[in-house]
Image (cartoon, rainbow, N blue to C red; front, top):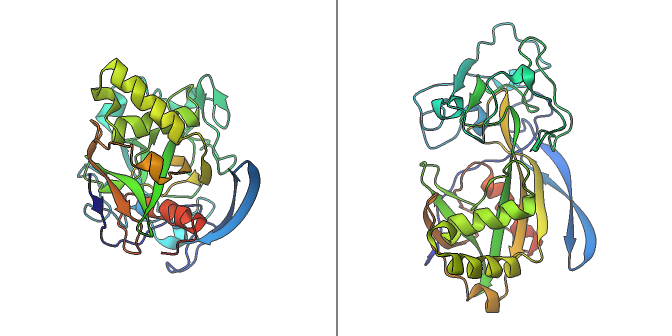
Length: 318
């Protein structure tokens, strides 16, 4: 596959702290700990983390529209994002996709009051990376730790509360340029990191490997022998990873009661390994390619912020 470089869109991810003008709304500093070459390091990075996409203020569709639908969120001004700010006139739109209400194995019961939140509930981890989140006393539903989104229910997300994902950032240097493997989403969301949801009872490390294999190397479309060979290669590639980010994601699918969180890991490849990879888009991806990490990257949800953190680790400023 070739190498791509795509256009610009500013966005971020994270926790809203105080109501303030848009230019500084929801900014915060976070600490992330990671292992590199057998040692423990910690770094602090101040990023522009904004609760923007979750309110429908940015995205590929019409403003305030929920992804893939004609349903529109109610508008939430910056000063009313936080739930601890009283807002008697708040009238969010209730929406849960029919595919979620149909009751697939990856979705919760529609009655949130029957669920044990802020803990591991059976095989489902309902603990948030942001800390303990509040439960609405009237509905028994969890409340988004960042704040209001203009929509209640679960939207397209299966779980009430945190929906955990894992994002593998696979990088290499080519001609002095830092590149990463990107997939093109089939839902119209554009280019993204080839990650996915952590299934019930699954470890993050397994999710990282499975999702990369399925989306970037068409694992599901291979014979057992071919799939076993691919997984061995992925095991070798992912033997040493560095945690980039763990926390809330400003995702356009988020609602007041269901939201995305992720663990993003960087797996940097030397030439001898990178040259052996055959990229092939799986069923969930429209295309897959090595992509230059450049200032005008345009990526899904908060993925650009994650890529920026990976670039910093390799002393590349974008």
